[in-house]
Each structure stands twice: as C-alpha cells, then as structure tokens.
Image (tube, rainbow, N blue to C red; front, top):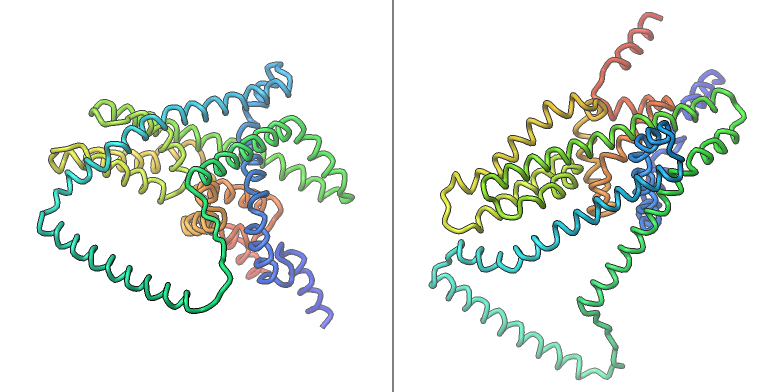
Length: 377
C-alpha cells in the first residue's frame, strides 16, 4: 500500500493538473471567461513583448539603450497599426456604399419572385400587428406599474466601443513598454523566490525559451503573413482588382487564424469579384482560387523552412484551440489561439509536462522510447 500510495502521490505531483483535473479545469476556464476584460489586454501585451523582444535585443547589442530600443520598436508597431487602419477604412467605406446596389444588380431577381416575397412580407407584417394589438389589450387590462426601458442608440454604442478600444490599446502599449524595459528584473525576482537550484534552472530556461523560440516564432509568422499579403496585393493590383492594398492587412491578420482565416479571405475575394459587373466565371474565380493556391504554397513550402514549431503541434489541437479561444474571448481570442498554443507548448516542453506535450504534438519518438525502456527493464 505504501508503494502504491507513493506511486500515486508521485503521479499527482508530476501532473500539472493535480489530483482533481476536471474541477481545476472548470475553475480555470471560468476564471478566464469572467476575467477576460483584464486578461485579454495583458495577454496581448505579453505576446507583443515576446514578439518585439528579439529585435530589441539586437538593438541593444548594437549599443542602443534598452529604453530607447523598446520605445523605437513600440512606436514602429504603432505606426504600422495606424497605417493599416488609415489604408483600410477609406477603401472599405467606399466599397460598402456601392456594394448593395452591385449585389442587387448581380442577383437580378425576377419580378414575379419579388412580388411573391412582398406578399409574404405584407402577410407577416399584418399578422405581427394583430399579435401586437392582442398583447397590448391583455397588458392594458391588468394594472401594472409602468416599466421604463432605456434604449441605447447606435451612436452611443459606437462611441462606447471606441472609448473602450482606445483605453485597451493605451493599456496594451504601456504594459508592453514596461515588459520590454523591466521584464528581465521581474524574471530575476521570480528566480530568487525559488530555493531549489534545479527549479531555478527550469525557470531561467523557461523564460529564455519563451523570449527566444516564442519571440522568433511569432516574428517569423508575422513576417510570412505580411509577405503573403504583399504578394497577394501586388497580384490583385496587376489584374485590376478593387482595393488591392487592403489585403496586406487582412491577410496578415486573418492568417493568424488557421484554416478559418484563409476561408474568410477567399470568401471576401469571391464576394468582391461577384460585384464587379459582367464577368465570366473564370474571371470571378481567378482572385479567390489564385489566393488559395498561393496560400497553399506558402503553407507547404515557406512555413516549414522558416519555423518548425507549428509542424510539431497536432492540427486537431490547433483547430480546437482556435475554436476554444474564439468562444472564450471572441474574434481576438481566435487570433490569439495559435500564439497562446505555442506558449503553452514551450512551457509544457520545458517543465517536463510530458502528458500535455504528447497530446499536443504529432511526434511519436518520446512515447516510443519510454515504452522501449519500460519493456527492457
């Protein structure tokens, strides 16, 4: 019994989830959801700091002070963000003003079908009015205190969203600057808290891998996405496609969402192609099909050459992670799904959480080796 109890206690200590994994998992998910207003900007700041950490380190090696190099990289990132918004908004606004008329002309509905739809609409409205009158009569027959319902107009909602977005953006930028300048001191203090030498080495190795591997990986992904977006925009410009340069931003951002992002870009290209008036089928399909071919070539050739972390993660885990973070934190969570999965992979691999690493990866080597060792012993 003691041996069995010893084995069980060692297994519980080795597992990062403890003795009650389901309860702990529910608590973690609930905390992530309830604290999303705080955790989301903090997570974005940490990932942005990891992405900017390698170029900041290079500038420091040249002789630029840490504060100045961090500020330069942060201002460069802000300039790219502002330039992307300035590039996209006018073009998208101009297309949205003319898109409904073009879509309606392309659809070219038959007049009989339109009249039938109008008759159905009129009958539905008439039935709705009768139901509303009946409900009002029932309510008026009962003596109830009036209830004041505050209805917010769309300008108020838009203004509130803009204010929240500006506040979160400012918070992200300030926190990222602090992480770039003082993150090393925070890591040193965390290392000093540990009394065991082996645990200190693990913590140092963990943060070193997070800064190097994760930072290089995120930077390489953004560089690949920007390159693909630039090539796509140039090709669209050559075939006289409307709004060619906004696709640099759209491809760079949406490609962070595996599988789903490229489908969204292809659907948008197809929609805009349909609204371009009288065109043959091959002209309509040229832009979306060409983009799918180009994106597939990047996925099979460029991605494996530039980085290898994504190749080690199971595609099923990637897809589930995108769905999970999208459900938890919305569209921004879906974009952050793969970067967060990369961070989790590095943490699990460094701290020796073999169960989590084995589930996440497609490699069979470690499991096979362990089985051989157990069989030989």
